[in-house]
Length: 45
Image 1 (tube, rainbow, N blue to C red):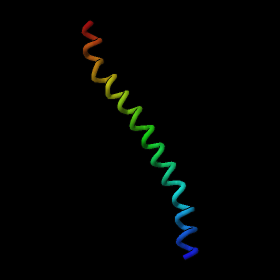
Image 2: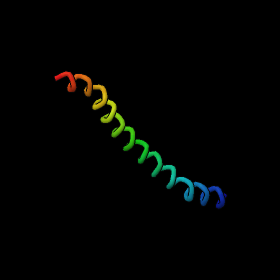
Image 3: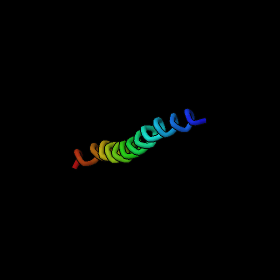
Image 4: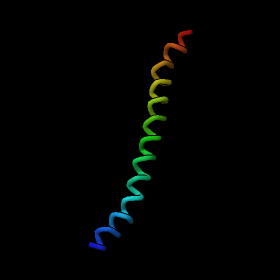
């Protein structure tokens, strides 16, 4: 039982950090996609 708890505590933190970083990257990618989609319209102006 102690080995399972130590494994979760060791592996759990990197998983949480990875999920947080993926969420941040996703929001920034949404902004990049929006910018790319509006680029042709701005170039026509």
